[in-house]
Length: 296
Image (cartoon, rainbow, N blue to C red; front, side, top):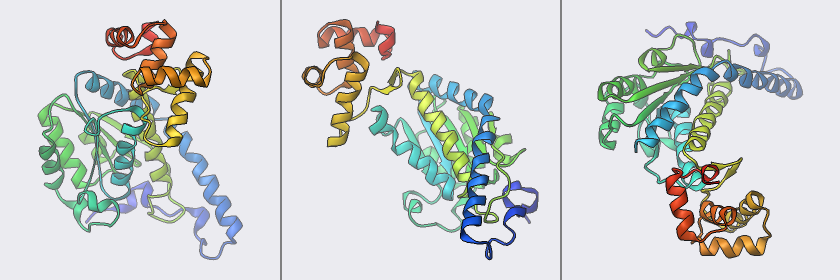
């Protein structure tokens, strides 16, 4: 039998033992106080998060992928981070992949028992055609999800760099991975409900990994997402605003050059900053591995 009592994520929070009779204001105040602890817990793991980012950047530069794996809330957070990369950073959908135990349907409806499978995670990775250039990051608040652990073992056999994100110290996924990111946020307001603080912590770590990895491969100039995809009217305006912020031109000029750049914000910025045409700017960006600043 699994001894959940040893896990901090399963322990009872003394502040909320009477959650069902607390005033609404007091309960919300406590939740807010508990949530405030999450960022501090994440901060302690920055050295490990840095290792994960470095591994992902190296993988991307070698044509590899970032693959998240998890079950339940953890799996959904991985999928969420993955699907937001293409519109934000202009990446192909296969570059950052989110796998959830039970398949895509498990994102909106729980698939009972999927997380306990010791073969499903391995099968999911085989279906992706996992290679040694990829990075696999397992996510599990408890740190003991079989779906994730067995997948990490398989990934290491293939030669992948691996990381594990858990919310308990000395976790099984941490032991199974090359890089252990263990963000201990303590007992939840609602006992064992790891969609709360643990989920917030995982989301914060995933934000850091994906964002800074994209910075590392030139998807950002200054603090601007220069590979943003103009998929709706809001993003069309944002694209113009990014060009204006990066180059200090007016909107009319930004729009004109953006058209000349076939809608590429990064290319338009490079054209303006280097005062060159699209063809020359493309060559400069290729030589700079896609980093706008390195073209200057």
